[in-house]
Image (cartoon, rainbow, N blue to C red; front, side, top):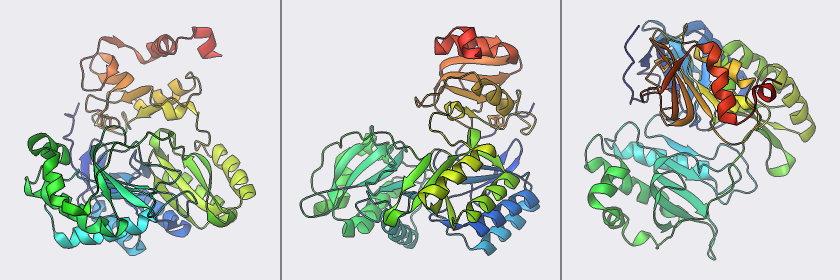
Length: 419
Ligand code: SF4
């Protein structure tokens, strides 16, 4: 067994991360990518990696199975495709283009911000991130960030609510600013974090210096703000109405991954129905479009037959699984095969993650706790209730006995779950 690998780095193209199944390259596209370019990206992933492509919970694309020799070739192939990729501090903005409900063009604000932060040459911790939420339908409330901006309506027009260190529910409100001031203020807030050291995060500054340090950095550009009301959970699977009668179609990657060949097939299918581009989105989603309502429906049906998740309540969305054995050298169980088996017995629900299947204690697919974590160990499948893969299991089972746990957890009888 290989030792679990260290976590903490955000690998890009030039510095892929070592994993149990080779090197992993992660990129964060910041706009729609022409379908022909997506297909070429997938072809490069197949040629230089093992052909497994993932979309992460934060909307990054990950390519697995690269080698020290093939990774630079893959990087060169992707560079030639001229995809707009976020290369510095991750600034995540609305994934849905032309959202009629959005109050501002969050992607334009994010682009300005990326340029300003790059020019400031700040030395920030690799995980420091910023969110720009335009106030549209596909909210970014579930993602955590050091600095979050959310467009809100005011009597004077749209303004940006600023909050620190968390997701929409947990972040600390800082103030409200005019959209034109966003670039300068956020750069100053990031400079404050950078000044606390190369590993500092917004939460550290809050803990050590309090909110006053951020208020001082923003000065009179901020008006006071309170916590915003929670919004309904954003659902990116399915048809998404855009401006001018167009639709985007959100499809999920089962357990967050797909083979490059299947994705190429999806690109051809979408193009045949009039779509032009695709964009990865948070929650392991790929948004394709634009479609008419009718062609979105037809494409959705065909995508389902290719194995993509087309229904919000698909049980596969309730399970997170890493590659596990045999793909990953650290894997002690076949995580994704087991996840596929378990998904057949989970009832449909929109209630979030229910099960995490992890090939080893590293738990890289889902570091957070889950109601049920099944972790590969030398003693079999370790069972952790309401905890993470890193916690000590309360019991050990063989893969064939895991279904009993699912039955117990869902409160159903075995007959109902098996039906
Ligand atoms: S958690 Fe999964 S992918 Fe990560 S190292 Fe362990 S087996 Fe490999």
